Length: 97
Image (cartoon, rainbow, N blue to C red; front, top):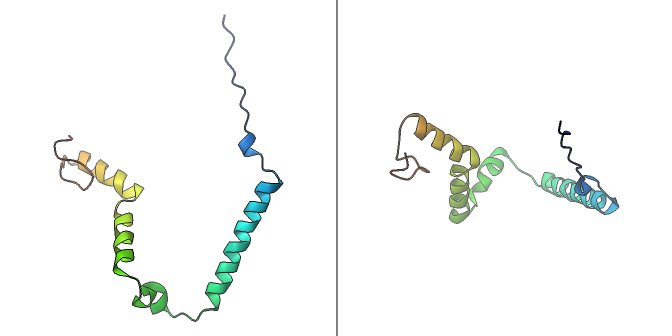
């Protein structure tokens, strides 16, 4: 009878050292600092939700494209196209059925 195969897994990346904890602490400190600086600025809901209508067109366009091509959209559109036999979905090339 063969003995079961066992794998000896070594996870050196899973153990944090002092440098790793310093980087994590520095990241959190930077995020808290940026949050405090942003909170000091007077903002109303118009400034928050519409960026005071000051965003350039290219930034809005990139945001729209990134949102429409997100992982959830990519997977769901392909699944929808296959489920309903559609060959003209955004991400499904013609004839790829």
